[in-house]
Image (cartoon, rainbow, N blue to C red; front, side, top):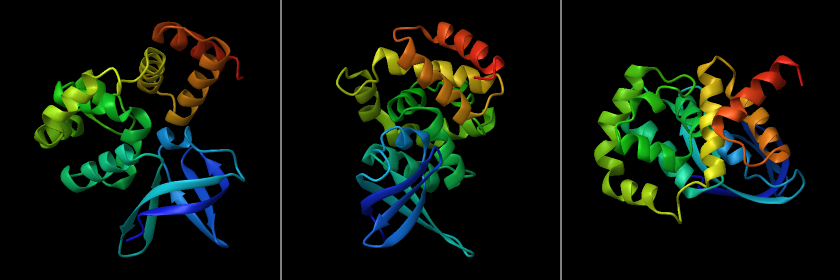
Amino acid sequence: MITFLDGKLVGALPTQAIVDVSGVGYELSIPLSSYDKLPAVGQPVRILTHLHVREDAHVLFGFMSAAERDLFRLLVNNVSGIGPKLALAVLSGMSVNNFKAAVVNSDVASLSKISGLGKKTAERIVLELKDKVGVAAAWEAASATHAPTPEQEQANEAVLALIALGYKQVEAHRVVRDLQEKQPGKSAEELVRLALKQIAAGK
């Protein structure tokens, strides 16, 4: 089992990273949450990995934090009907802490806003993972040390709202992050309004 790669980042897209390890290039599928944490292309990087073996291929998934990889494995191994692609969509659409809090609080509405996740799948996630994320997750979600910053919360809400309106995850994420850099301190509602204007203007 490949558990991590230590090398140089030679390419990065919101859904993919390529790492050169001693002259061997590894292509990894990554969630948006990990894409945000990648260094600049050409810089050293360590990516935690999960090797998924199928009949027709060996697919390597990469994560910039242990919490992301743990959640990915929890979804793939414990929720029927969720494969690696959908697990990546979950990580791209919601932070680990927000996901755990949603499961603990049986917040099916928030989970079903994630791209590719319908209400039935969201209900199945809550049913099958509630005992597994349990008390520790409730404590972690409530802890100020681990909780997302107010700005991250607003960004997550805005991205989910845009996805619910039919925009692609990658586009929603890019526009919201761009707006927060230019105009920090905006609420989720303001971010959605500005993002819609920006997308409509084709910027």
